[in-house]
Amino acid sequence: MDSRWTSRRRVEAALNHQEPDCVPYDLGGTILTGIHHVAYRRLRKHLGLPEVPIEIEDSHQQLARVHEDVKKRLRVDVWGVNPGKPRGFTRPEWGEDGYDKLIDEWGIEWWKPQDGGFYYDMRRHPLAEIENAGDLKKFKFPDPIDPGRYEGMAERADELMNRRQAAYVLGRNAPGIWEIALWMRGFENHFCDMVANEPLAEALLDIILEVKMKYWAKALELVGENVMMVSEADDLASQNRCLCSPDLYRKLIKPRHTKLFAWIKKNAKAPVKIFYHSCGAVRPLIPDLIESGIDILNPVQVSASGMDTRELKKEFGKDITFYGGGVDTQRVLPRGTPQEVRDEVKRRIDDLAPGGGFIFNTVHNIQADVPPENIMAMWEALQEFGVY
Image 1 (cartoon, rainbow, N blue to C red):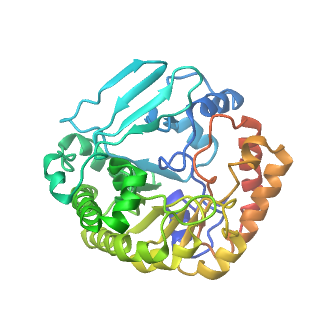
Image 2 (cartoon, rainbow, N blue to C red):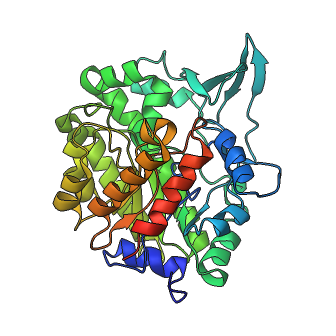
Image 3 (cartoon, helix red, strand yellow):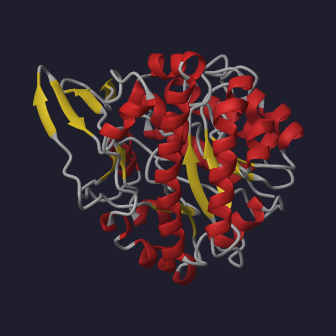
């Protein structure tokens, strides 16, 4: 590894579709590229690192905040700057009927089994019973400019971008416009709204869009020129197909994506790349996402229909950076042998790395059942095959 290549320089080259000294690597830079606390504890022990208190970075997914000693040992190139908790909201948390339960600031209720549960699942949606757009006026949406969100944000960005010459992703205040609408209304309700109650669907999407625009305006003002990537996320697809038709996406969601991404780039004090997350078989929508303004696609779910990495690189590699897709996390990483992991990593690097435009990460977060031997087989293969 060439010492002249800082993490920041390495990531910038990849984002600009140039080949750095090696493929950049992320672990824990976002809540989409992280590791479950159970797997993280095992990894630290495997690395011979001391036992330390582990902070939960994302409560729903039960992700660990990755410590600096792990980042240094594994030569991680990407950090995260995420908003804090709003001062004006106290999250209800309680336990009953065998579940740990909580209600987030959007009013969504989440449950995690107390016996062997690994993460929280949505169980109640606050807007499930409303009937029309007028009913939205009765609901109090989160305050996007609550000062608690921004405490330490500017200082952390300054530290990472200047003193340490690191790359980072500036985190969002919530999942994407469409995903929050689905969560608040309930999936079936919002899907039906998009076809049979369009005024309600659009009104809800517009409120969420406004919340996000206010957040990004404040966050980007605070970090100033110390910004490279910003994170937005919706899950637009399932394992086999898009969650709504491309025509419906283009009618209701794409215009709002385009407006939001343009707003972010307008308010940023330096050129910024839009890191956009969608799991699943999202290939039919990639041209639309590019047109809407994304620069980075995460995670590249290699096991989903149509998500062949070689074909994706050939078709879209000049337009977007692929961030993730380094190893399948549905089967290979948790249940494959170390050699199968190595073979998978080599294949994905061969497909996605040429010409730059690739930042290595797993397909979504490393889950609780992944053995540390496989995580290290992945990392060692990256060190071997990820050199340009």
